[in-house]
Image 1 (cartoon, rainbow, N blue to C red):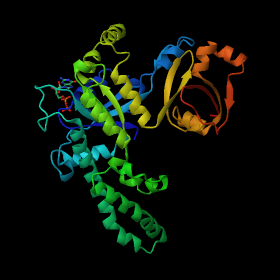
Image 2 (cartoon, rainbow, N blue to C red):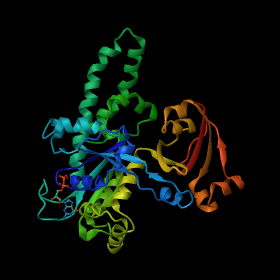
Image 3 (cartoon, rainbow, N blue to C red):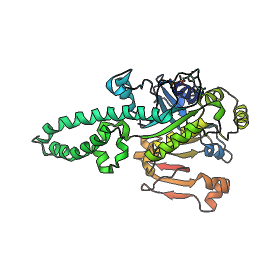
Image 4 (spheres, helix red, strand yellow):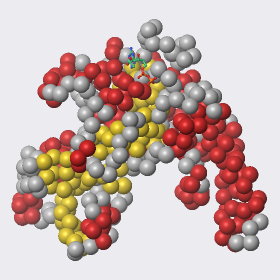
Length: 368
Ligand code: GDP
């Protein structure tokens, strides 16, 4: 589930955002494993470090890490009761790893708001309640099935059912109030017990405030309200202007794009920030491989050991892993070449228990 689902009420700017995200699709040839559906976008993860590495190691090819975004349309008030595309929508959202909740923070009389008035906090509550109720139904179904399982002759089945019961009851109490499952502070062990339910409100999420072109700088009163709300519920906030982003995403020329951003007083595209935040929400980090053939960013789950990280390249690398030669890209920027790193003793040799860190450059040694 290494993807982020984009949700939000109708007319808040989801499609605009999604088309901006996917306007420069990651080179499909590099990712033959992805079957791309219309609502799924494979997006390159912007990483200035990768570009900087090529100042010191000149490759023929540069390949960024990728992350998937899924446009999940169809959430309306009443979705949990089957309104609109209710059930289909909820099925899709259960499958994603994390949620980007787009909230309308722009005024525009030409764009109808489903409730007739722009009010981001009330929009957030509408959606949150639908999601909580959808989870409530899932949890209640499981609870109803429990008594039979608890009576099972099979000790394993009966034991598991008994263990999960109090967790489900805790969830019901919160979800009935419209509170998300993530808010009740379940222990890791408890989360493990209910992982097969794929609860929507247990997933990490962030609010993406879609502001108008007059508020490119990022803050307005709507955004302030969302920030206040997000602080309480422990979610992140990213502010972007979907319309502006979709305009610049159509520019091919990187320099022109940069100039456009600077004119607007922005250091970088808000889309880039959103992609990186999404990637981080999924618990993903990046290491690099660097040689004359290619410099490439690889995605690994935070906390992965060296063989697992090697397995991202090829399962043979994981199976036959011997050791990795490791340095951090910042050290390359300081010492300018791998030869210099070696000379200064900065090239570490690490074994199979080594926990790979974000931003490291690795050379693997393995048996075939
Ligand atoms: P969705 O229903 O959430 O997918 O919303 P859309 O992306 O289709 O956007 C709904 C309408 O709002 C469209 O007419 C967009 O052009 C408009 N829109 C999207 N983002 C912005 C924005 O930042 N400012 C303004 N003024 N309009 C926007």
